[in-house]
Amino acid sequence: MTAAKPASRPVMPHFSSGPCAKRPGWNPQNLKDAALGRSHRAKIGKAKLKQAIELTREVLEVPADYKIGIVPASDTGAVEMALWSLLGARPVTTIAWESFGDGWVSDIIKELKLKDVTQLHAGYGDIPEEDILKDLTVPTIFVSGTKDKWINPEKVAQLEDITERYELPVTSVKYEADHAFFNNTRPEVYDETAARDAWALVVGFFNDKL
Image (cartoon, rainbow, N blue to C red):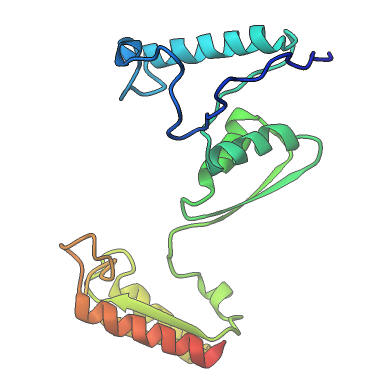
C-alpha cells in the first residue's frame, strides 16, 4: 500500500504528547464525555480505545489483516512493542530478578504463548543452599537484621557456619533491626542509625574490593 502525501499542512502544527495548542474553536465542553480519571480497562475506556483503533484504520487506510495496538507512550510501551514484534522466530531466554522483569516473562509465555522459552529467575534475597555457596569466590558482604522473620537468625547462623567451614570470602554484619530496616518509607521498621552505618560499611566494602 502506498499512501499519498498530504496536500496541505496544519495551520498551527503545535502538537505533542504533552501540553499543546488547542484547535480553533476548542472549549472545555469538548471534554464533557471524556473518560478522565477512568481506567483503560473500564467499559468506557475500552469503548474509546476501540473507536480510536477503528478511526486509525479508516484514516490511515490500514489493511484489514494488520493489527493496530495502542500502548503507553513510555518505556513500557516500547518494550511491549519490541516483544510482540521481534520474538518468536528463535528460542528465547528470559531473566527476571525478583519481581523486576517478571511481567515481561509472563507476557512472553502467557500472552505471546511462545513455546521455546528458557526461564531464569532470581527470587527475593534468600540464602543459597550449601552446594551453591561452597563454590563462592567473590568477596561478599551480608547485612541482616536479627528481628527479621524471613532471613531469620537461624538462616544467618547457617550461612556463617558454611562460611567458616569452607573459608568463604563472606563478611556477615548483623544489626538489632527488622527486615528492610533501611527503608525510610516504612517507619514501622526503619532504623536510621543502623541504615546509615550499614550504608557506610557497604560503600567502604565496595571501595576496598572493586
